[in-house]
Image 1: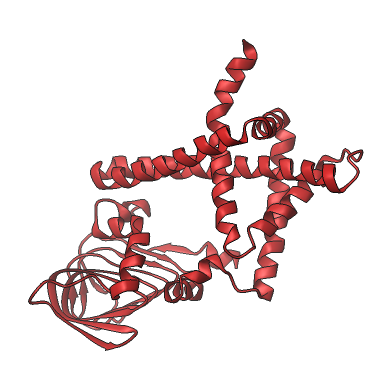
Image 2 (image 1 turned 90 degrees about the vertical axis):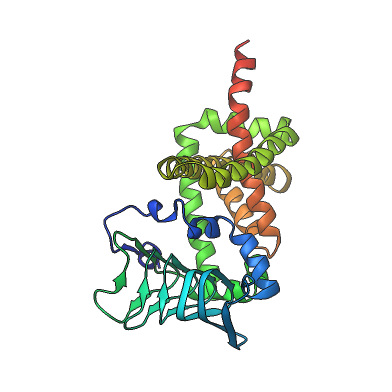
Length: 331
């Protein structure tokens, strides 16, 4: 599974992030939630007059001739017979038999390029594969091909039934993933608590003393950073938007890790206080209890999304309030 998850193949020498800057695909990936909503209602974005589009069945859209149309489809495969400007599919395949002048991308599907077909832009596949009939395929110059080959069925299933994201199916694989998650977060939490016990202890104290303040600051900062990130991808030059996106991702990831570790310690202390004898001062046991509690919360259908948001908000809030608390303490 780890090998599959880590398999990222770039067929050109440029970086992964360059594929997403300044293009129709970038806007589509950032606004994937809005695309999903539009797809639920119509299956694809409305075509302007003169575009030749037909529906073969409930799962397939055929584009005969739409040279000025950027096709966005949710839970339906798209076949380009003659021409289209660009194609983005969520939960389906893209089959190019004619000509696509711009980018082609799919999440939870594959891109199939028939013999003689042409793709002028980037090809991006997440959770599927890229299958050109000719070698080399007919492509635009210096264009990217990025493939993340993992979890195709999960992505496709989510596209067909979005509620599965909030209500995961209980299975042996589901249990195995949670056990691996317990081990991973236990080791991470022990490592951070050992390396920086003071920072973790102060974070836990801040949550206990001013939880509303910490979570409010973190939540609104998280929303604001999302808006700024979308704006930067749309307005800033390619190299700047790539740098901003990378820094935002790293910052949010670190905040989430720190916030979740603090929540592990806090929940572990509460469990020991109210359900067990608090005389056992084992830090490892405290962390283990907290990890088990949070893994359970993140496994409960629908509730997991709120727990995930709470961990993000806690991490960002704790990072932003750390300096002010330190200054106050020094005074």
